[in-house]
Length: 335
Image (cartoon, rainbow, N blue to C red; front, side):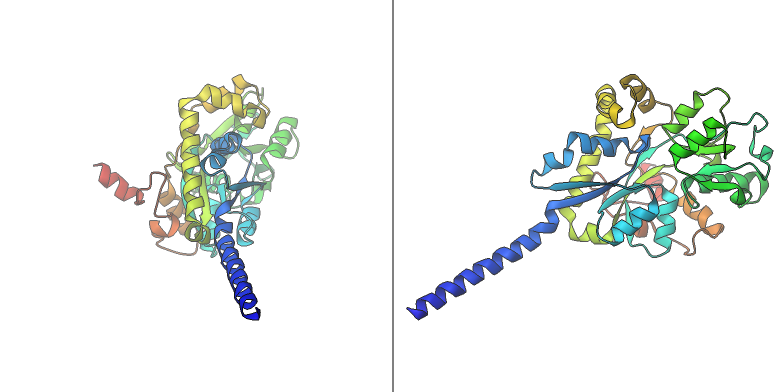
C-alpha cells in the first residue's frame, strides 16, 4: 500500500512541476505592456487600444497601457521590465542608445508638421530672437531641440546659439503660456497644439520642422528592448500586425477613425478629421531621416559613438516581415 501511495505522490508532484513549468513559459507570452503618450502623432496607437486589435489577435493576451510623459520615464520603465513597447522621436532614442540602453526601432509611426510658433510681433525669423526671448520645448535632446540646433548651425554656424534660452515645458503648458503671453516668446509645437496655435490671432510660425531638418523625416518611431524582441517573439509579431492594421485603418477609413478618436483628443469629429488630413500629417511604418540625425548628432557631440550600423538600431524584421536595409540600400534596391 505504501508503495502505491509513494508512486501516486511522485506522479502528482511531477504533474504539478510540469504544469508550473508550462505556466512559467506561457506567462510572458500572455501579457504585453505599451507606453502611450498624448498627441496626434500617436493616433494609430490609440486606435490599437480603442479597437482592441491585440485582444482580437489573441483573446488570451492581457494588454496593459501606461501613460508616460517623456523618454526618461519610458527608459526607466523599460529597464524595470514594466514596459515592452513605447513610442518617441528619433533623437532621444539615439541619445539613450548611445548611453547603453539596449533597445531598437521596431517601426516608424508618423511624420508630422512641427513649427516654432511665436506670440511676438517683432520676431519674424531666428535672427530676431534676443537673449531674453524664451523658447519652450519638451526637453533638451528632444527632436525639437535637435531641429532648432540644426537650424542654428545652418544659419549662424552656432549649434548651441539658443540653448540658454530654452525652457522645458510640456506641450499643453507651453501652449497656454504662449497664448497668455507669459513666460515664453515661442513654442516649438507639434500637433494638435501646432494646429490650435495656428488658429489664434497674433500667433505665427517662423520655422517649420521640415525647413530646420532640410527635408522629410519620421517624427515618431516605435521602440522595444532587445530582451522583449528575443524572448517574446509572438507578442512582438502581434503588435506589429496590430500597428499595420491601425495605420491602414486611418488611411482607408479616415471618417470612422476620426469618429473613434475625437473624444481621446477632446475634439469634434470634424476637427479630428481635419487634423488627420492636415498637410504633412502622415502615418507610416517607414523610418525616414535616421542617417541624417545620426550624422548631425555625432558631428555636434550629442552622440559619442561613431559609425552606427543600421542593424544596431533597427530590428531585422519590419512590419511586412522583410529584412530591414539601410536607407541607402533601400534606394539602390528600388533602382
